[in-house]
Image 1 (cartoon, rainbow, N blue to C red):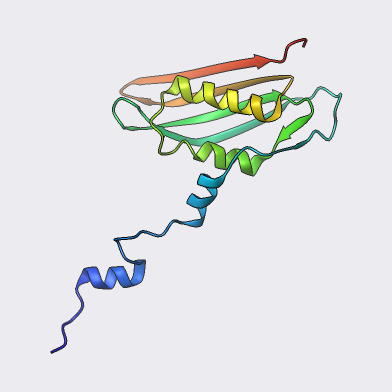
Image 2 (image 1 turned 135 degrees about the vertical axis):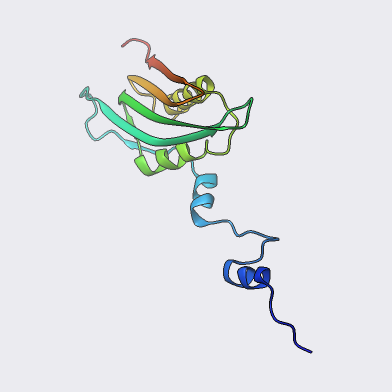
Length: 146
């Protein structure tokens, strides 16, 4: 005797088995991603690069609630410039991490300094209000001798 498929059977056939979820290509790129740089096309010229990343997310290390922020990076490159897609994937890697506002912005600064060694850099995180409190964290670095 043949039985009719259940709703779960139909969903699993359309979406894939729920026992082993498939890793999506974007998730793989985020996991495998790292900051990539390329040579500054105008070495010796001081110019400012400003980058806005309006969809930053991480999780509160105390409550587990999601935190949302707009990250702004402003830097004067020296020998290397950060590649934007790599930066986007790097920023997305914070999505499931339990990390404070303060630590996330400081870590982003440290990683960018390590990757491209800019003359100067500022990273600003403008976190969305939660519980009637909003936070802005701003950190800066200037290369010695500049």
